[in-house]
Length: 529
Image (cartoon, rainbow, N blue to C red; front, side):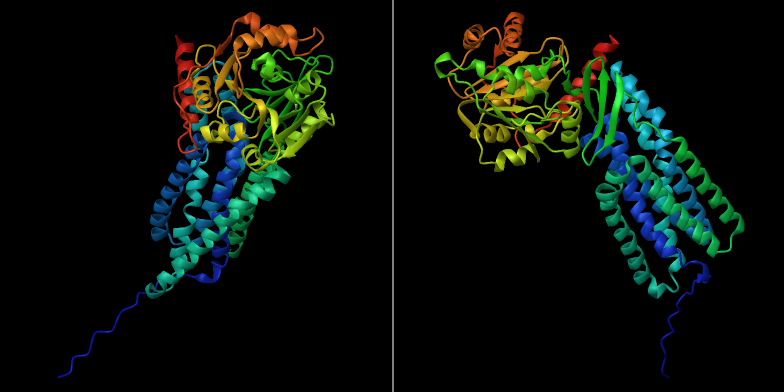
């Protein structure tokens, strides 16, 4: 008696596919929207909190958390209610909430401004967390799409792998497009708020098309109402991206790299970037000196002993911004030419329009500062670094390797001068920058800036001393624009030589953000005492 193997039973899932043609386009747009919203969110947050790795870690980590929850819950819902209309309704709601994020986030973000001014670390980070939590609902709903689509598109168990692979490929392709489309096209052309609206509007219209295809009159009406609400809220949300924290707002724009504000306070034009708690350039057509750190770039060569001192003819400014320091240096040294490296063309354009940066002796170079320093064949008498954007600064401009590259681009007896932020009592960032420079330069000096929480750190390559600074200052003519700045530094008594030793940052290990976070927490603790 021959036994025959039992036939393999293939389970058939009975689903009406006549109304699921929108599913796969929705998968693609869902993947695009989830990554696009995450990247656009970074630009929404940057004007208030910056764009450090700390911010990105929170943004990416919580976004992935929301998606994971969406995958899990969406899979369970899809098994229980395998109806495409439910998916379209979920994505409609997700689209509405995503489009409302810029409007709803604004009052939460503005809390961070008061928190920063009051040095309230709890409110500062609380407003950051509150903003990122706004993404929980729409991103979680977007996570429904992939498991729901797999459930709806599987016809037989034996074709499950092929179907799941196609759905995941579509979602991933959408995510790839979402990685580039907002950054390269939408944000530079339309700005952050409109980019949110484009992403959410596309998702909402596709959801509406799905509801109409599935002949859901109530669902279609609901989606249409949401679309109208999104359009109305977009009109209500127009206006300045962020209120000026001082003075009058003259100009505002979003560039590829920065959120830019030009403020006017009396006769002064002020340049604020991103979180805007630090001024990056000052211009007063009636007054060259500012009383701020920019003035001190002129006096860096004065540390050289008189017998090796000579008037500089070539300077490099890494972090040109609006050109405040460059304009002062070419005034102090008439034969000086300044190469100003600025990574953001929009910032350079603002410098030309509002900050008097039109002298032919100032050569604007649009490039990354570290890359330019490494690749240029030019050498300089002064290299100034003013690219530290508080509260977080680019680590690659703080390391021993960076300062070694800067030293290699100096002419004989050239100097490097760096503007470093601090608080009134906390010098830990100044100390680590100074000790890192001292590991490269034969001598390093610090000058505390009166009325500002900044310290200028100067590295020299020839014989130098504080006494030489004093002698060179007194030898300057009274008409020199640099003389009152040097005299101010001498009279304050806040000039000191840095001893060897201390912590050194390297390209491999430069925890700048940890140091700054410690400073913020300490400032908050002192403020609460």
